Image (tube, rainbow, N blue to C red; front, top):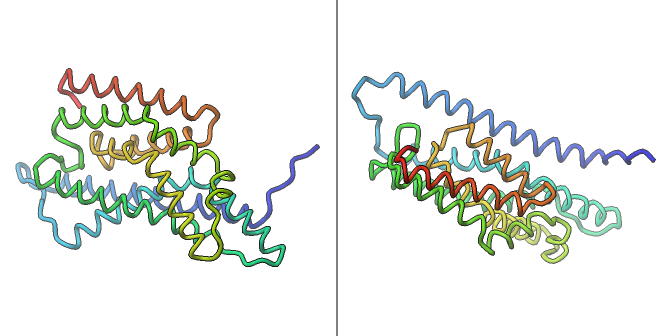
Length: 257
């Protein structure tokens, strides 16, 4: 029996989510190229500007938020699509429904809060002279500690609880369902908090390897996708945790990040 084709609105929503994620990745590629050109054009022996005015802080916050959008939207797509399907059935029954974009906005708001925290951390590390021009920690001890923290977190009960919520879109929505625009925004926010609880330490690994190291950004994106979407995601998370622990031990033992 042939598989039923996806409804047109579902295809459009999925295409929109992936298109936004692709645009975010394009932004990151361009931003990295501009950063590399700035570093190359700097006079030899001259440190890059370390002053943090409002414009630079805003640009850094935008970078983090766009990066989170590109990394997290693909893995959030099943939850957003499930919300859209429930909302579509309500609309077909003549009930009040809410666009999936409202749910997605709540989700992205949660990662916006993380982006603010990451920006504050980056400013602090830079002022303490612990970041390179490519936004990588210059201390092997700090890098090793980040790897160990990220690896250990993968084995915590809190990680497991958050990951189970992220892996079960229908169960999450049935338990947390609220009506109206405010309810949809709150549900998106709550899902974003579970997602944040699942992945926030993994995002901090970027400070150890270089915030604009797009290879690592891609690897972490793939790991998040695998944890949330593939069978045995919790086991994949623990395997990744073991690799992070080994990496942290290596960095601390050798002093090489």
